[in-house]
Length: 170
Length: 61
Image 1 (cartoon, rainbow over the protein chains, first blue to last red):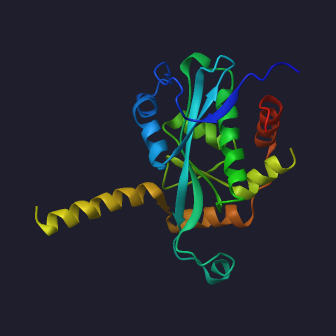
Image 2 (cartoon, helix red, strand yellow):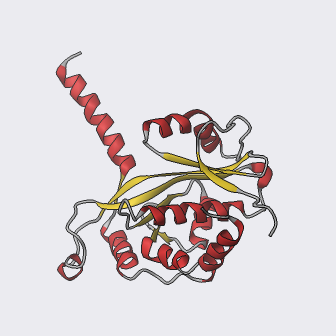
């Protein structure tokens, strides 16, 4: 086996200064806000490191709720009567510009989904909502079998049941 | 500051937090969403191969 090329860790005192993905909003957030959010437990940022422990990507997870509108009684019976359905928000996902074309986004996304699924042992979540920063991010999620939410063009969804089926057989 | 101003600011802050912490779906979206959770799709070839690639690339535990 070749050495492990990448690893994932919760954001701690990693060097954030050199990270550039090309989307100003995502770079700004990572450099200025991510550590603070992590400290306050608002969001959980995770970093992807290469063998030299350089940050090559990051993503953020947080607790999320989905409020649904009136349902036909037959369907409503099958769902818990919670006003808010617990979910996981994949708020941001970014790959370093210097590491484009290596399909690292795919690994970042898989780590986010795998972690979200593992967390359901301790915190319930019916699925993952991804926030897409632009059209190419949206295509990326849809390509990975997320479902589009038509009136929220920046958001798409994947059911935890589907994630579980993808990882349970690993 | 008056109570009103304070309360308004508080309400606005709460609204912002609420919008960030929840997604309110339309009737049409609810249908898509409910269908996705009640009949969780089998992972297709892209998701399956991405999960496999992840397993082979990232050592766990």
